[in-house]
Length: 156
Image 1 (cartoon, helix red, strand yellow):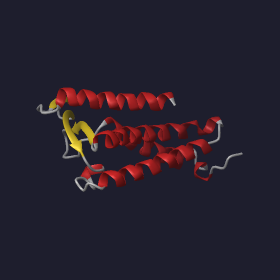
Image 2: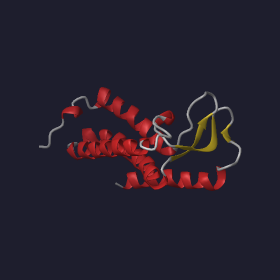
Image 3: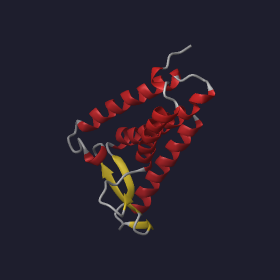
Image 4: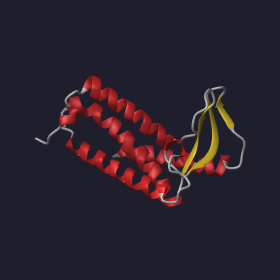
C-alpha cells in the first residue's frame, strides 16, 4: 500500500513540475544523447491510440479500471508464502502506473507526458508509463522463471 502511494505521488509530482516548468519551453536535456524532458499531452493511450476521438478517453478509462480491478483481485489471491513476494512487486508497479494515468485522464481529459528518449524516435512518456512497462516485464520474468505456479493460485 505504501509503495503504491509513493509511486503515484512521484508520478503526480513530476507531472505537476512538468506543467510548471516545461510547458511551452524547449526540450531540456537530462542525459546528453539519452534522455530529455519535453512536456506534451496525450489524449489517447500508447502512441496516441484512440486520441482525439472524444469517446476514447472513456473507453481507455473503463479498460484501465477493469485491469486495475483484475490486478487487485489477483493480488488478493497471492498466498502469503515468502516465495510469492516477488510476484507482488510488479503488480504494485502496474497498479500505481495505471492509477497515475487514470487520475490524469479523469481530472484533465488527457495524460501529461514529459520523458523522451533522445537516441531514438519514440513516444514521449511519463513515470506512470515507466512503472507499467517495468512492472509488465518484471511480472513476465517472475512468472516465467521464478514463480511458475502463480497463474493457478487458489485461496487456501
